Length: 483
Image (tube, rainbow, N blue to C red; front, side, top):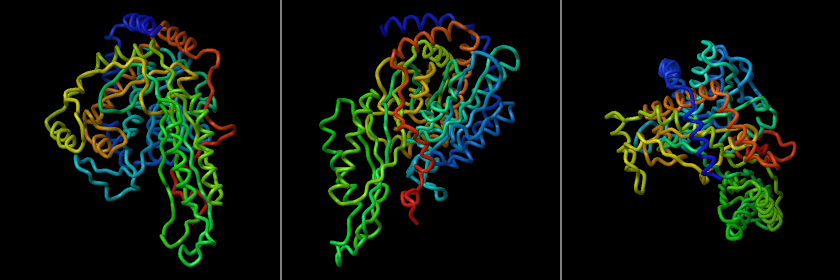
């Protein structure tokens, strides 16, 4: 079945319009290159947490508004989410953008570990500063084609906050923001160029807060009830649970708060937990078991459990037809090479990364990955269950650089990040142009989508009536209502 889908996709890609029709896109992206890089560097320096990206989202929204896009801010009840629309009529192509940063990964643009002296401790360790701005440049280039009459339809940029655990796109889907979209495109920074249609892990995120009773840990321990003990028991129960979960399950946790002094029985403790699996139905079954681990910890320690649901995201629904369009464009466009300065930076940086690493010239290759599952999660998954969706990764970090690392932050602050971002922008715009000017591309994508969606349809992992967790990146005591 997969082989037939790929064959049809390749044939469809071969029938796309001639490349000469996209020369103006390349010129548009090139014309935006320096401005886009300055914006990306600004967002890199802002390094704002999920749902708190006020400066980052405003920067992109304002620029799109200046370019003639109709901007709607604060959509889906999320202050830092927005849409920006240009053109009219069908088809409507969505281009997704992100801009949130990760905690505890502050880093200068240097090939050695050196956190920034100023800032909030966050860093763009997943390259979302490049993601958001690169997608913006693509949307503006496509708008130029619509304005010039070389393409007909609508392009809409989606400003998507809090991808890192906040599930913003799932809430945006629930708000109906994708109901009129024909096709959605996205990309992601990485350490290599990759096209294809792999899925990803579905995920549920939750914070467990334990409330106990403070007391002198030596003088009157019997009067205290340790919130930290409750959390530690929950973590231990989760560790024991690992052996008895389906193959492919991933369980993660970290302690956000656990007391401030050894001689005080902690009255508050908080942990952040993930449960993941390639199939959302398995995640749906595993979450109640995770919850029981927390409930058991509270029961055993006579503490009170507070559950803060942060939302869930589905696995990606592949669309080989759309992926073939992206593949054809990226292979045509990729001319990434490092100059001498970038080469020295990359070689020095790679001394800090263990294991065997790909050669530096790997950035000249476009890797294909059809089928299978990547071992990460994204809220783009929810989008892919309501509209045909395709994405790719562009080499913005030195080959072998792990995501969610200080090394990724460092690379993203250099011209290596700029080059990958501009390749992504041109690939997105060229692919969107192909889709808008070839009705068969949309027909094939929708037929593939309908076939894979099946009878069950979209079943989100959000709790009923759940609101976006706008405070999920705030300090634990503040979010819990403390001082």
